[in-house]
Length: 183
Image (cartoon, rainbow, N blue to C red; front, side, top):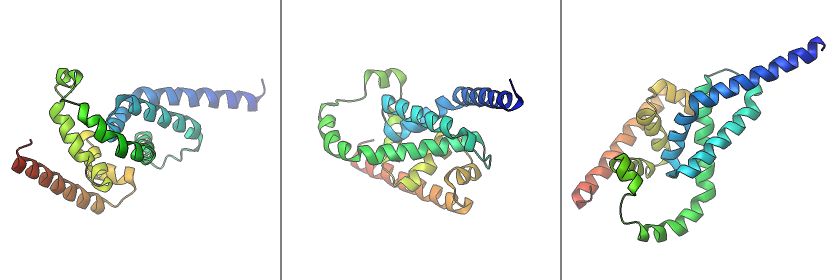
């Protein structure tokens, strides 16, 4: 094998090892992020699979201006936004009908004790995207303001402002529910 072929083989093997490592390290975290956006386990699995397909295809183009984790989270958020745009009409038409048949938290939700957190996720999901993204990354991914700024490609001050406004919107939503007796 000549030097060029050997070098290409090493690069391919290293590429594969790096990819496998990224999947092992970040798959669960990316699934949690996707689930917060789409509220469906099967859809979130599909989205994360699409994320890793994009990652694999573009791994050689990664410029290392940020960490791999940051890059993968950005891809995940973009895929979730694409999914939302793609399925918004379906949800507009079918969700009200499906809601008629839902009588409460599912057996799985009861078993997992997640009804309350699901309600909070639902409230966060109802916020405008610019607040929702930041609240999800801050509270559910434990990212600090500077990490969020890097992932979303925003100024730190913008992230702080949106975090505060998102909290205020969430608080108003909870207060309205309490006033209506639905919490």
